[in-house]
Length: 108
Image 1 (cartoon, rainbow, N blue to C red):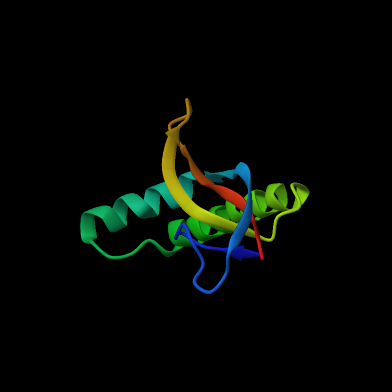
Image 2 (cartoon, rainbow, N blue to C red):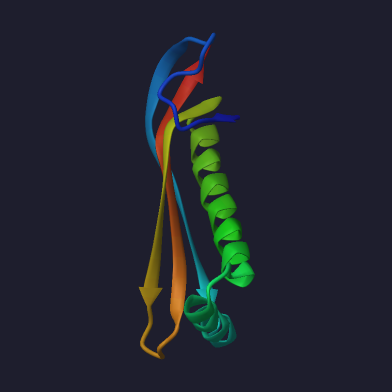
């Protein structure tokens, strides 16, 4: 399955547009990650634990999107957009949400 953020694929012709497909992933970030990320925010630097959770969420959202495209009989998804959000929950923690969406197409 070809997946791209562009609206065309060079050297390939789109013969059918099957519609919008998408995938979502919401993963919890535990209080220890939140605590250490807060320290990183003050001191500077990267938060490896959050990066790992975001990477996992992105991969899961894209896989969900690809599965929808396969169910439509497509062999590519073009115009892919990724959105990231943090959802605050009542207990003071947060959840990380990644949404992937694109147009499922059939390439020649």
